[in-house]
Image 1 (cartoon, helix red, strand yellow):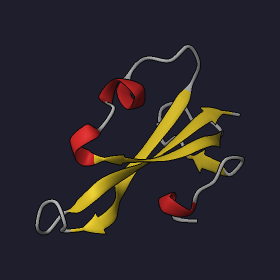
Image 2 (cartoon, rainbow, N blue to C red):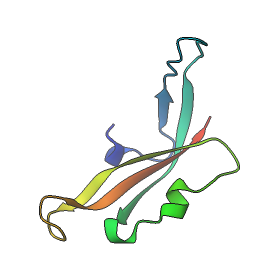
Image 3 (cartoon, one colour):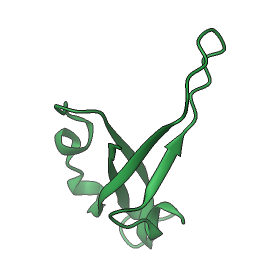
Image 4 (cartoon, rainbow, N blue to C red):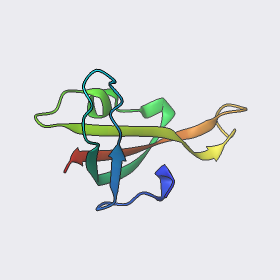
Length: 83
């Protein structure tokens, strides 16, 4: 699914490509998908520290060009935890 179609319980897998130390892929489980207005983006919630391994996937979403011409008005954030 696309980021905007992600739902809690979905898995996303990240390949690790360090050629010096090959590692198995990491699997994260989606815990939450939120839409935030760009002018009210919660930086601390999205980028702040956590007490366990997490993943934040961020893309544009919402209406296009209503607040600022040529740009989406919102961000879609997928929150995921290491499985």
